[in-house]
Structures are given as structure tokens and as C-alpha cells.
Length: 75
Picture 1: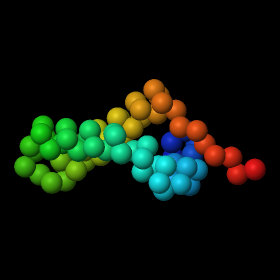
Picture 2: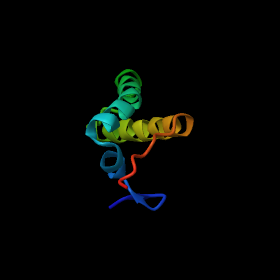
Picture 3: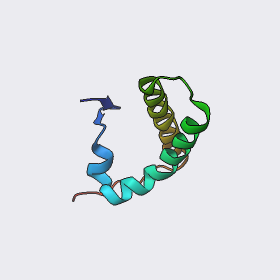
């Protein structure tokens, strides 16, 4: 599994739940989708998909720096 700062990548969904995680990722996803649709014309689905995912990750990271999410405690 991929690890980011010692945590598994799926921990966002595990910690926040599907609905909250989907709401949190909606804005970076839609912006990345628009950027990919308007600017990425690589004539290769694979390259466009990888570029879209990279932009989505960067935007999500920037959003997490500006608006850190609150993790629910299990205790």
C-alpha cells in the first residue's frame, strides 16, 4: 500500500467516512477535472489520466494545508 506520512492512503475514508471524504474531495476533484478537460490534450488516455490524478493530488494536498480536516476520534 502507498503510505503518506506513515498513514495509509485510504485512512481519509476510514477516519472521516465516505460522505465526509467525498464532500472534502469534491472541490479538488472538479477543479482537476476541468483543468484536465480544457488543457490536457496528450492524445493518450493514459497520460491524460495520470496528469489528472497528479493535479487532483496536488490540489487536494493544497486544500489540506489551507483547510485541515478534523479526524473523528474512536475513543
